[in-house]
Image 1 (tube, protein in one colour):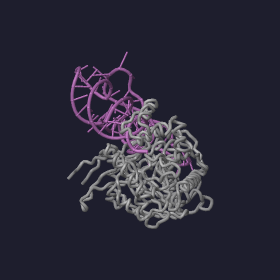
Image 2 (tube, chains in turn blue, brown; image 1 turned 90 degrees about the vertical axis):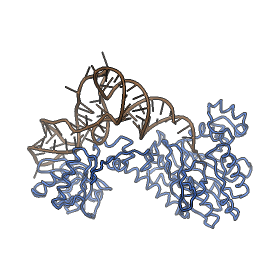
Image 3 (cartoon, helix red, strand yellow; image 1 turned 180 degrees about the horizontal axis):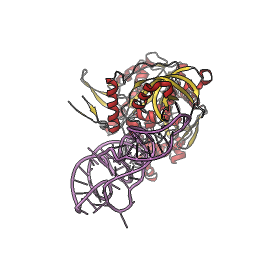
Image 4 (tube, chains in turn green, orange; image 1 turned 120 degrees about the vertical axis):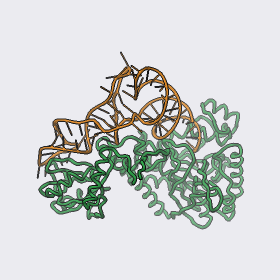
Length: 497
RNA sequence: GGGCCGUUAGCUCAGGAGGUAGAGCACCGGCCUUUUAAGCCGGGUGUCGCAGGUUCGAGUCCUGCACGGCUCACCA
């Protein structure tokens, strides 16, 4: 039998647990579906007062008074107080409670709903049943669970001890549900495309590599669904979207998790200006829905999602915050002087693409606190976007920044297969020169495009970051239930025969 | 990967300048039939992250390692 490492308290509970089993009481109980949840009982007190009701939940506090006790139980919807009296339960049952029931256990009760002298809605319990016995001790009730490592590794404890954590993830669900509702309403169809891809395309990032035994080939966890979704547009879908995970084999930080949730959407016959309007109304409606206001607080800023968002050309943003022009950055010798002046160190090859990226990342992005569309991105860093009609060095592409974070990326999709081939070719050249994030040639995708990709507007929204901003969280780990942590044996068990 | 900081009881934390490890909650025993961070009396339950080193003596000083946080790099 396997015996966990337990402290003295836990050992005693385990003995109790064995005693319960021996005396025919199942410490793991059975079904106990109640008509009302704890919140409902409280909200409908007027009509349920003096009525016999049932309630269930985990015990989070016990306040004993000798021959009576107050217990607080918690279900998903809320807490409710229970009043256990020796007179009501009888000696045997009350003593069983005193002896065998602890904080952390799940119980089900039946009793009369009333209000105490201090105004607390309470169930005067006539009978109770043990639903599940807890062996481990819950974190402390007042200070909660603070240790970030424990909170992330054992998120269930965080959810129990810190009600705000649970509420935050409920809010995350609501945000995603609302976005789905809006896209559905707008006529988009939700689809699923491969997570395992033979070529990791659609973004510039290092992929996770895995191996598929049956096919005897390397596969990649997707870094984006983009190229598959556009194949669907070739196939005749007009409005599709996908909300799911992307995987990027890169550093973890306060705003990066290696697996993160992305919304991608494609809208045939539209362009990036249509997408801009779609993003504006989607975000404003979503924020208003979950916050009861189009405003949020993030990193000490009040952010207002009321349309229209600020719109600024990429070149103007470069000029305004870095004091440089695209032409200067495209000229290698001028660019080097600028990098020096701006005190930017380049680790990557000093190509125009990398230099433009670097200057924009370091000097420009962080300035956009209120929702801001930066549009007409340079061609060098936009290998999948359609060229701007009046300037072949720019693309019909925008990124949306909020709170200094990149939240969305969108463009009129490049649908010229010849041009796409050349752009992929340039990416391959960059890769040969050591750019590990450069994109791969995807001939199969080119071929799809040769059958005709109609003019299409495409969009990607980083859902985790959006949730951070809407819920006011500084760290992406706070909005991901199980953020990526390094492996650690946190719960070693000693083996026994 | 670099820098800084952290790791002490189940949880939240304190441990001056090296001298037998502390508090609150939780838990155990006693009292208490409307409390709610219930209260009162008594009880400390510990591999001080791990491994070395210095020292008569290390939670404390030194080195290495592990994990975490922040940050830089990386990441559109």
